[in-house]
Length: 424
Image (cartoon, rainbow, N blue to C red):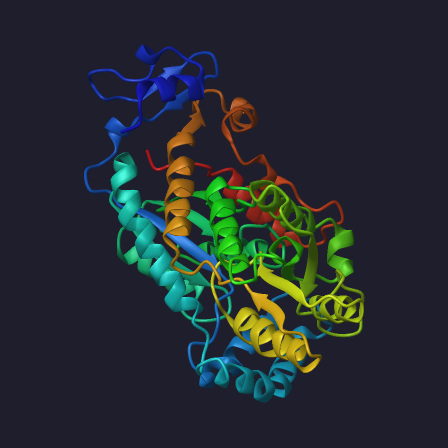
């Protein structure tokens, strides 16, 4: 249960002003806000937790549709005549990507891992956050089924009224989390008017230094380091590998590089800087400038300097998919072996690790318990922005990139920041 002392500290108001025996919302005169307590929550009113990700084709045959949706996403890539060009690019790239998926088991395992993470989190969350229970997990993929519109339709059919839009990406990028939120906003706007406000949303859009995430990464790294001979263990170079971004996106103001770096630094602090380390970037496409150094180039560069032992850590991914199973395992590590390197290995992805599942539950629970449903009184709507400023624990979500030119981004951020509610 949420302790009264915690509520009092969170809002800095006397505990007796929060609850009354009639279970009616109480007013905080200091901030002119209405407070809805856990006592007002309808019995058995479910809380939806929406796991958002780009997704992946479950079978090789779904690859074409996946790529088609991906190349049509203007939050990810902007092309002239995109609606015409995207299908052509997808068709040209499909055979090569199908071959890659066939080499990792015939499809992406990301839905399976997402479902396992979600169910494990729900089992814990129902115990540690009873005030918002029961909870139900949903999956909203950007380019593969279940798609955002399918997820939203299911939530409405289930009668969900309170939901958390949870990004599976620990580090925010306009190309990933931003795209998922924009698509969720678009799909909400397509609903009939009487359904658009059925669900009260809160957003958890980034968590790059959450202690549980850092502990999970550090534990996996320590396990992998134990596979090296003790005499060289502290000399192994840790290569934290994350998906790269075009420099045009970075220069626009995307916060992704700094948030990935924050995760890396937090992990190294937890490891007490036991090893030399480097942040590197993978998955560059095309001739334009991208974040560097590239992971593959880094391995080759250190190999030329006589380095044999390097440990690859997929620091921006929370489960296995094509970029870990194919790119890291079958491309980079195999290339290293061809160069005669015997000490290049990869840390296992977080997947269904119990430490990580517990971290997800703690993350969502904390989000739910600290974000009270606060809104200004109808009599004084001029205080709305002040209420948000006082009570929104994730102000960063409302901040656009300084050179953002995407109109849907403004609408999406305005919509979700204006609906920052918890589920009690």
